[in-house]
Each structure stands twice: as structure tokens, then as C-alpha cells.
Length: 271
Image: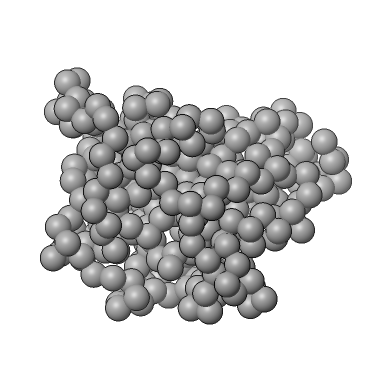
């Protein structure tokens, strides 16, 4: 352990060398190396999380750079996982990066997620968010699911036994009710606001400190600088985590490209 690099963690009351060692042994999968995945990856790498898996089949474009701070102008055209790995190693060469240059699907989700301790969803579509939710519940994995759009964002954390994403949003919205981020836009700095919260949730989980945003939807509106917490409960009739689940196999929904305005269910802008 690099005592100098992690000194501010080591001297932190309640964290110490034990907490830092837990981070070093941790394995975290980041789904989406875009708006949310960028600050998540940077802060987890800086914190000393031992292994980061990055899942993203996309390449870096000029339009990404307004919010995807993990990438730079010379990275345009490169695979995001390659760009991510390079910048993570430049920040902290002690971190191992496992690259997956493809998108999460019903065929690979369980295999990928099964190898990690904590999963962070920073994807830009509902199909992926529900795959992450469903696979994590089925495999007993902890996860953070977040989303941003326009001037606001939201996130929730799930651990085995807590309410899942489907307890709040049982099904993805219909395509006719969905707006695209490319059309409505997003304030770039919102990705940093929400992504750093997701990274903090992950660090707390791995180190075993504090309380998590379980059974809670945390939302942020940059226009008023207000954070709001909505408490919700695990439902016995939830089709995924309830007493008698009806969702027992992964099903990949048709691509759903961003927010459902009427229910304030949002997904992140990574493209």
C-alpha cells in the first residue's frame, strides 16, 4: 500500500489502513464510460480501488467532451474503454483495468456482473439499466443506478435485501414517452455531481463505512441547487425481488434512449 498516495484516507477517522486495504481488494464494474462513468472511474481510481472493469462498446466523439471528463480531444475516435484505461493508469498505475469493448446484453450480463463486488450503472438507456438491476438482484450483487438529463439527475443504491429499481419503476417507459438526451440536452457538470455520489456510495460499500442510499431515490436539480430524498420500500409483489418473483431470467428490452419526463425517471447521457 502506498502510504503517501492514500495518506488522507489512512488518517481519516473510521477509515484507516483497514478501509484502504478493503478498497485495494475491491472489484468494481462500471457500465458506461461516459458522463457518469467518467467521474466514477476517476474517483475510484484515485481512491485506490484495486480492479475496475469498464463496459462500453462506443467510441469517443467530439460531442462527448462537454461532460465526459475521462476522455480528451486526442481520444476522439478511440474506443472509450481504451481511453478510460489509459487515463486511469495515468492517474493511478496501481489500479488494474479490465476492458470490455462491447455493450452489456442479456447474454453477457450475468457473467460480467458475477465477477465484481459492486456494479455502477452509468448507461444512457433503459434497456441497460434494467439489465443491471435484474442481474444484480438475481446474483445478489450491490449496485448504484444513476441518470442525468437536462439540469437534473437521480440515483439509488441497491444491496441484497433492499428495495430494487423495479420496486420504484416496475417497467421501462414506452418509447412514445421517452425523450432523447441529444434532443433535450444536459448540463455537463451534472454528470460530475451525480457521478461523484455514485463513486462515494461504492467507496462506502467496499470500506464498510456510513449508510448507503438504499430504499432511497436521491435527486438533484442544478437550477435550484436542491437535493431531495424520496424513500420507497421493497414491495412483496415486486416482480423481481418480491416474495414470488415472476422475473427469473434476463430479458433485454428494446433500446430506450433517455428520460421519461412524466415520471421523472431518467437515464444518463453517455453518447
